[in-house]
Image 1 (cartoon, rainbow, N blue to C red):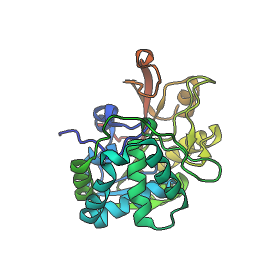
Image 2: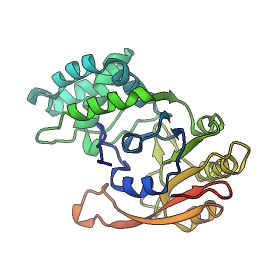
Image 3: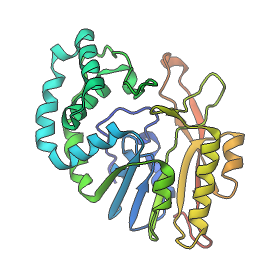
Image 4: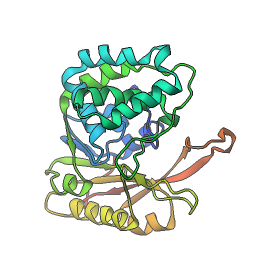
Length: 278
């Protein structure tokens, strides 16, 4: 199966890990993602239906508009990717407009612009809920037209919802499969990447996710759950009731490209007795 790239840049995106994830995702009628992010797993799997959730309202709003109004959206978004728009003072004007904007369509356009023009494609909000990532200073930001068309086509099989992971998991029907890509636990005290939207994803929530995954897989619905995370003593403890698969992936969030290195990650598969991961 050909690998498809997402139209958003996304910290922690699963494109580099997609072959490992596909290898361990069980078959099912519907794939559910409580932390959809840029949607790389959605774009690179072939389920009949998808339920794609996230707590980031801007992300879910964007996906819904691309699904329903992609021709209009692509036409209008292209206008934000000319040379004039790739200047710091224009970026900060658009960022301010975005933070004040209450129109869903315009906000979606600006969200794509900010994603492709801001530093490292990060998505970060301050405590007031304002997008605050600085200008990225790229020579010519890429306009992902092909990727937008591909996403819009695949999105006809998907439902997009803005809700917390616990609600998404509790609503998972029998016959579905769940893939969870929560904010990763930090590898060290100085490498805390758990900030997620305007909240932080705590250790309590990490543990709760593992408990819910086990309950969902072993309960009456018998819905298998695959979770990705850093390979740490804590995650191995939380996922002790799952089948663990070690993978290496090159880290891409670093100011010093020479300092980027491969780290161990885990794919933890919670599944009911007798279910295989092939």
